[in-house]
Image 1 (cartoon, rainbow, N blue to C red):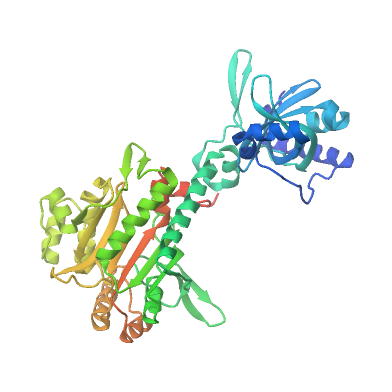
Image 2: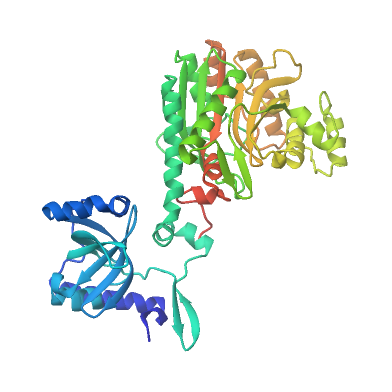
Length: 507
């Protein structure tokens, strides 16, 4: 019976027995360090440099990683070693590493997935494959659980597959194992990191200041969402995990900074979907003496830079769609977009009129929903999912935007835009409301909606209102969802695919 045919518990027991034998050989199976001089990609990218070095001065290199496949052929073997940069083939001979190390340690006690250190020289095999001829093998970690490496075995004329690790939920739960078995997953997160670096560089070049604001807040605000609630024992007070950092960043503009930004972890106690995780990342940006028109140019230029940095082109393939982030992006007023898709002009409509239109459009409404909520439902049902190429939807109704400045020329609207592509919002921005009297009235309206049952409505933040009374200059503000933008820029279908450790139901 092959090891693959054993149960998982039997394989684990077998590994623990091998661990005992390794220790009896006087070998430490968990040494403290190993000197790594190169990675697999260094060798496979420029192999001739290493081969020439060997010819001239006998240069040796050392690499380390997991053994993922192997072919044992009597006194010599080949195996693939996987490190953080890729894989490299290793050639191992009994005469080079010794009889005990080869016949007992390597052939009998080392398993797929064990972490090894290899020292040797680079060469080409007879078939031309770049390999490392090992002169030293060191066990760096003996694993106790079998790696589910997919392997096809022909048995009695039947092809059997062992060790497949394809269940999405298991892959999310055990991301560490997912990245071992599917190393291409790591590239998604490398691109995500580069995305953030490009955005940070863009903002730093404009001399915006990166800051940090509180995650635990006595009053939550800055978005329409339900919060997570906690309790501070020493102060005996209720606190909320922030749903946004907007109101604190605006306080910094009041305090005299001309431009600030923060990459923040925010938390919303709401439903989960392939576009929503209760813990998510966004960047919020606030720039004094600017408006939403300036912020549109800022946003499209920054996102275009991200596409170029990650793909070398403004065009990004997402599923069946090719999305082009080349600037400028179209600007479409929200009511125009809704009228085009529904035939209804919602401008100036009363709450009762909107309820009737929603009914005609087969959208369910209830008594907790105000004007803004109904318009948002209509937009989401009939417009948003159809917007594939990047576009700015502008000029939202006042009722939808309690923190945005009233439109300077269009009564009943505010100076707001959302950037939408691939059918989902990726950013939200305003000319920020800095009239403290108007802001108080709107927050009080939000508080009334909350009293009426809308648990996503904001409350009144007295300290924020006090800050506005000391004066905030004209300001443009922006929030970009890093997770959603990462989904698009890496071609992933679910937010879980761009989070290392997405939230899951208990096992």
